[in-house]
Length: 179
Image (cartoon, rainbow, N blue to C red; front, side):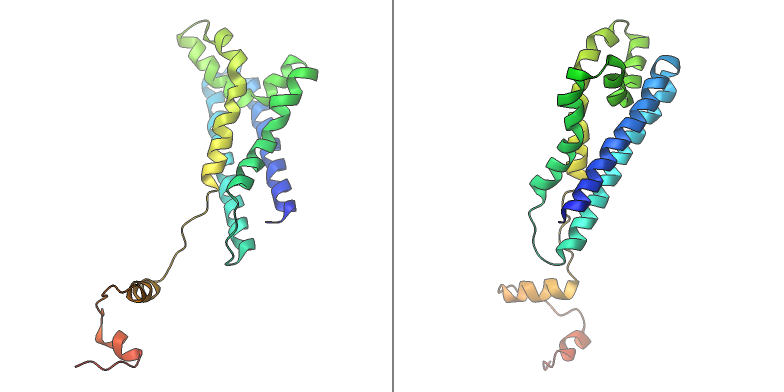
């Protein structure tokens, strides 16, 4: 697959996480229930980008087998690198909170029921990269090749299996005589 589409998908993942993180960060302390929509929308967004990535990979392959399994995981990991490696070292805390902000409403909602959950869970928000990468990788997995029933029948017949003719016309169409 061409590198530009990989770069575009990585950039979209990065921007989507920042925008939805900003919404989640803003709503986490004010309306944590409404902020959960940002979390759900982030999951939907990552899933949809995975599907777009898969379709682009299949379109670019055009019948060739390509090994995109590792490439699709690296695409999602590249979008998470700023939050995992760079932000804690140079960015203020609020920027780091915006990066993982889509998951802050979930922690704030849990904090309503179990006080002190937020203080215990905040240092572990970097683990939110795992479901994002896993969801993108799973959504972008290649689909099984779709074959027509005739291709399946001819493939099974070529392997020595007996395949009954479904209609007399199907058999006669291929020039075979039927008794």
